Every structure is written in structure tokens, then in C-alpha cells.
Image 1: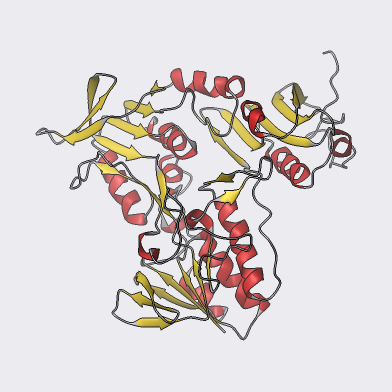
Image 2: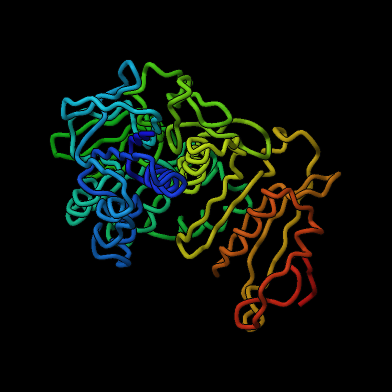
Amino acid sequence: MRVVIVGGSFAGVQAALDIKQADPNAEVIVIEKQAELGFVPASLTLILQNRAASVDDLRWVTQQKLENKGIQVYTKVACTGLLADDQIGLSTGDKLTFDRLIIATGSQQSFQQAPKKTTKIKTCKTPQDVTEILTQLKTATTVAIIGGGPVGIELAAAIADVSPHVHLFESEPHVMNHYFDLEMIQPLEDAIKNSAVTLHKETFIDAMEETKEEQVRLYFNETDLDVDLVLLANSTRPNNQMWQPLACHEDGTLQVNDYLQTSNPNIYAIGDAIKVKFRLTGESLYLSLVNNAIRTAKIASQNITGKMQKDPGTVRVSGNHWFGYFVGSVGLLEKEALLYQNEIESQHFYVRKSTITTEKIHLKVIWDRDTKILLGAQLVAQVADFALLDQLATAIRQQQTLEEFQLSERFYQPAFRYPLAIFTQIEE
């Protein structure tokens, strides 16, 4: 069996390794348009924060490592489209036949009103992007970031340390709108406002144009702003233009069944190429998250190698550290209650990080009023406990009740944990 995987990022590499491990006799071929594998999209922020010296320091996989596993890798080769008779076209002019095809072509930020030919409006999706942005930041005094989601806030936090004027634009009522309820994200918003970043909420960019002074002029709210550099961190869209023969949704994502098969059952789509089911409501979501890419890659790989399994969907777990706050979210938000089939309840808890410190984690927990099944959780703190976020994500996936979660055994050592159960509150 020949399995061709188009896209050598997180999803594509995971699928290749899983298929080869499950079926050592399978011929697995990865097609990647970049010169090297293993690029980390967060490279720019990690370099600006002096946590890495270069893009190459952060590469998590190489062509040689995959080839050592018996996987063929074509780099600097793009797929030009789907052909008849289970073939794809390549930028080399060659055709490649497959028994199974996995589409893992990722996504890209876009802005329709942006000038077509400009070096002043960038995304951070390739090593070349990162290199060019690092060079431009040496002289840029004013930077605009479009999008107040995870990518935009990450960029704003890092660039605020090297550029005197940073503007962050978000069209929603608050940042991280799809991951947090307002009262939970308010401390982060306050920290952003107290930094070098100017936050523009509920603000749409109507148009952009490059000026004679080689700046970019942004038009919004009947005013304008000239900046030296614009970074796009919004309007993430799948790179699915080449797959036009396959059925797509209106937003460009490929239609897949529960087994992640497209309208051609020999072709699977994973990661940013598709929408996935949100377990808590059953609705379809577009999630450009690495953990979602990895999960869908593993599901598709199992189905290709004969262990048929439906994609159970996502619980939408996300977290990071920005502007002095560790934030994490998983599952249903309170403002999404109308989308849930039953009544919900929620409560705020303030959990001690450890026995030797008084620092607390602000935790909001949401559950089904009747069954007490956990539905969602959000945490905000100035101390890290992403292990707790993972535990809550597991509990929500397993549909544990509040009581069942409380009965889960957790490691205890006074320097790292507080002895009482998570939802136990005492006066201090």
C-alpha cells in the first residue's frame, strides 16, 4: 500500500510515523513544499524572548529522522492538484499515484483588503517569514497586529519588548473570545493595557494601503493609523485551493465523514484542512491548534491501517503564558450555554498552587446541572499549572462528574501541590 501525505508539518509527520509503525510494509511518502521539516510557528516569539537563537534551534523533526524510519520525504516540492485515477500532480512536473492520500496542507492567515504586492504585511507561517520579520523589527517603531486570538496575543507580548509602539486589533468584544468568558480574561486584558501595547477591541480594519513613506495605512472606525509593519494573526483559512474536485464547505474546509474521509474515500483530510466536532455541543468548529492536528492525524492513520475508528471530536484545550499570566481553557464556556442541550451551572474556585506559597489559581468550572458531568474549565493565574489543565481536559473527555474528578488521585509533595482536593475551599 502506498500512502502519500501532502504536508510535512505536525499533522503530516504524525500520520507518517503512525502508519509506518502500524504497517512497516507500507510505502509512505511525505510531500513538503518547504526546504526543511520541523518548523515551529511560534519560532518568532521564542527568538524575540531569547528562548531560542534561531528557527533551526527549534526544529523538532528532520528529513533524515523520517528517512531513518523508512519514510520517503520530498522537500521543496509542492502538490499542484488532484488528478484522475488516484494521482496528484507535483511542481516538478511528475505525477504520483497513491492508494491512500492524506491532506495535511495546513492553513494561512489572509486579509482580502491588503495590498497584493507589499513586504510590510506579513504572516508568521514559514521560516522565511520569521527571518524577514526579525530584520524588519530592527527598524520598525510602530507595529500593528491584526487578531486578538492566541497567535495575536503571543506576537504582541513578544514584540512589545522590542518595539516601542504595538497596536493589537480585535474585532470581538474581548481578546481570546472563543476560549474564555469575559470575567476570566479580564486580568489579561488589564495587563495588556498596562503594557506597551495599545489594545483596540471591537475594531474592524476596513482597508490597508502602502504609503509613499513605505508605511502601511490602516483604516478603521473612521480614522487611520500609519505603521511600519503589519502582522496578520486572524482570518485563518485552510490551504485547500488545490483540492477543488473534493467537496468543501463554504469556508473552504474539506468535507469529511466521521472517519475523516473526504468525498473520495481513498483521500483523508486532517488538521487545519477540516472542521471537527466540538464534543460538548456537537457543532462543527474550525480549530487551528497543534493538538487538534495531532489527534486527527492519529485517527486517520488508524483508519488507513485497518483499525477503523470515528473521530470523537475535540474538547478545545488551549493554554499559554502572556503578559505575566498563565491562562488555560478547555470545553464549554458559560456564554455558550445556549448551544448545550441541558441547563448548566458554574462556580469560581481559588486553588492554592502549593503548600509553601499563598499564590492561587483562579479556576472557573462548568458542569451539567442535572448529571453533574464536567463540561468546561478556565484557569488564570500568575503561577503555572498546565498539568491541572490536562487533568481537566481528560476528565471532560471521559465525561467524569464533579465527584469522580474529585476522587482522582493526584501526586502530592508540599513544594508543588496543595493537599486538599481541587474544589475544596477553606477560609484563609
